[in-house]
Length: 249
Image (cartoon, rainbow, N blue to C red):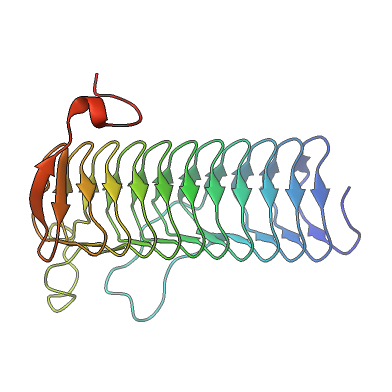
C-alpha cells in the first residue's frame, strides 16, 4: 500500500510494500518484498533495500557527505545497499556509499558515514555515530552513544559498551588531513570494550581481549588480555575455556 500523500518516483517496488504518508522515495531506488516505510522517511536515488526491511519515521538514507569545515574532501559512490531483514530506527542517517548486511538493526538517531561497511547480524544502537570508512564485522554489537572514528576496523562478534570513544589522529587535527597518518583503532574478533573506554588512534585490541570500563587504551592489547586503568595495563589473561562465543580456529 502506497499512501497518496507519499512521493514515490521509483517503479522498482516488490510485493507487499507499504509506504506511508509524507515519505519521499526518489528515482532509481529498488525496494524488495515486504517492506514498511514509515512517515517522513527520505530515500535518495541509487539505494537498494532488501526484503523484510522496516524503516521508521524520519530516517534519511543516501545523504551526501560534505560541508565547509571538513579537513578532507569526502570520496564516495552514490549508492546504499541495505540487506534483508534489517530495521532502520527513527531519525537514523545513512550516508551514501554504505553497505549494511542482513539482519542488522540501525538504532534510533544513529549515523553511518560514507565508505562504511557493516556486516550481517549487527546491532548499531541508539545515537551511535560511525564515521567514514569504518568496517564492522558480522555479529558485532555497538551500544548507545558510542563513537566509532573514521578508518576503524572492528572484527566479528565484538561487543562495544555504551559511551565508548575512539580517535584516529594523534595530532588532534593540528596538522591538517593526511591520509597516511589517519587510522582508527583495530578491534579483533570476539573482543569486548567496557563502558566509557577511550581508544586512541591506531591501537590494536587483540582477539578475545577485554577492556575494562573507563580505561584509556594508549597501546596495543594482546590477545586474551584483560586491561584496566588510565593508561590501560594488562592485569591478567583469559584462558581459552573461559572465552564465550566463537572460538579461534
